[in-house]
Length: 493
Image (cartoon, rainbow, N blue to C red; front, top):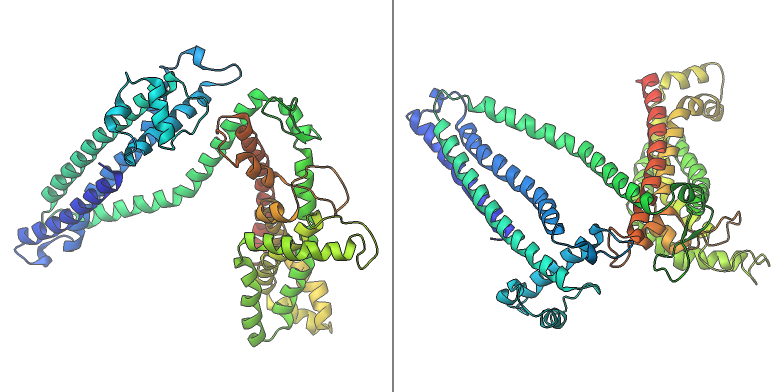
């Protein structure tokens, strides 16, 4: 049974349970809701909760655990002779899972019969030819052992789905009976439902924490796996990025320093554009602009934050890059030959800075407005002008919050990808020339994971190592920014 059907059945049973629970409670009270401890809807909600929560809970746990159990069971079928030198069982299992998915797709599209897909005695050549004819060959390392393991995977998946369906329906039926049985006038349905809602809210609040923990563990495990294949010291302190995983281009040089340099260089250029423009805009909006101008200008400025980054990237590639070449390129307006192509640090930095303007201006505007009016009045009382009050009173008082806003914008710049890919190029180099093409950590993560590479291969594992490096850097910036903002809030709340 498809998973969507199972979900629909459970929801239908819960709807019936809600009606039965409500009706039974009213019937037990003789139709008078005043004789019930709780409102009739609570009795129905109690039945609904006892059906949905355990049924969907078991379903989610089963769907998470089943692939792990199946992979461990099927991995025991793979003999050591099938594992190539330098590879791992994870790489082989990735081939098995892709082949199993190809077989399922071929059966679903009708290009292969179910009997053929499940026939373990089928000739290997005939079987692979059918997969090729169905357009489902997704690996070049297909062998008879992988095909048998893929067939076994599909058998276990089908059996697991059948057992899960039976168990979920049984739990839903048990929850229906339990909830309807409790629908009595003296049952405290409201208390039970409210406790369930409280648990639901706690679970929703925990999702962000659990997601962060999952991301960290995922990055950490894959980073450790990468460092088993490649020296950590060479990765963290190497000054050359020249990956070569095929074995045909010599040994790989995977030094992250050029990527970090490009990341910080482009971010610095972006902040050099965003900080003065954003800060001056914030000062004008908070101190000089009339209410009508502010009501119009601030939303218009914040529209920049809603533009997709791919649009900024196209703007960098098609407009800003050629403009910079006309100014700083050979035969340009200035008569210099600094920028040879449209893709450069300056191109990506300027466009990224434009993207960051609303982050700096909006946060700084809110922070400046939070400075107590009494401080301005005191400054005016001793004869200071408005500009002197802004320079010597308002800005120093708001400075911790402004610094926090700048650090948050910096973390946003470090994590940007599309503007860099389209505007800065893909060259990993150490250079002080802002008119040369460079790349960043995020751009290389995209390039390493583009295509059909296996996530257990070195090509993909290096992307996880880069992601872990970037995660630590942005985490440190965010922590510093939050600490500064918290001190500011403690001072003026």
